[in-house]
Length: 324
Image (tube, rainbow, N blue to C red; front, side):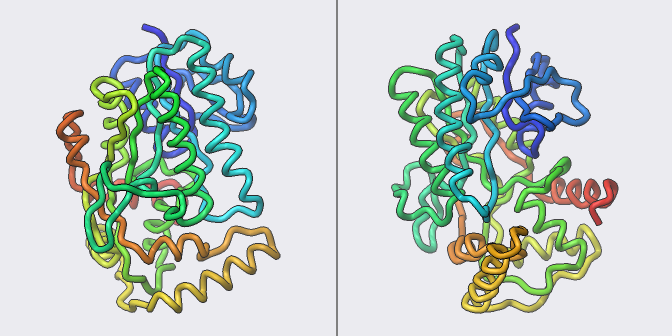
């Protein structure tokens, strides 16, 4: 069996995709940037960069399939153009390398942020959405990257797109913005909340969904990999029960959160340090991102579990690895 190349295996979702592939008996090659490493898995690593096409040709050479999970996932960046270079140009570079090297299929990891959600309703893959509706640099860059992936599929190259929602679980090394919500909660650093909601999913189910997309997905199609729609208040109630840490009881109005985001992001521009409350994150919170994974269930056989087990693993992993 030819090896499967995984980009982003040093990060949260990519690590779990690589582990799931190993569990299934695949040989795994991981693309890593200089100075990065894939912890605890023992996979083959190839040094490269999504912005350097020649390094991608080397990484893709001899591979049967590619899981392009890597992304610059930041809600604030001092140089926003970096997100476009990695997420948009980098995706096009990798897909072109995959085509040149005769790769059989690419599973591209997009985001639920590219899914249209009607006001007060439930979004799915059919809901129309435009670039103008994307809030912030990260979402805009991923929207354009997904567009590139669809263009490759339309030209005849087999690309299947998955749109994970909000993964939670163990081995969130950095951690991701989602992991920071859990981490701040168990640290007691979450004094209040806003009225928002997200779809949460066990990262292990997200990884399984990637493999199902490879095995059963249709080229050019996209599949939401989610599980449960929860308000932030509902999420905190579950975290309280699982962690023993009391959930915040104060709900702040959006305009106060927005003002805090403005101040925090303004300070970040001066100091260069990541803001405590990125303005893009505050702006995203204004809309509940509730979606349905019915299509992935119907076409892929995707059947996610409730997220409580993943939340418990996240709490335990952060605590046992010195994050708290």
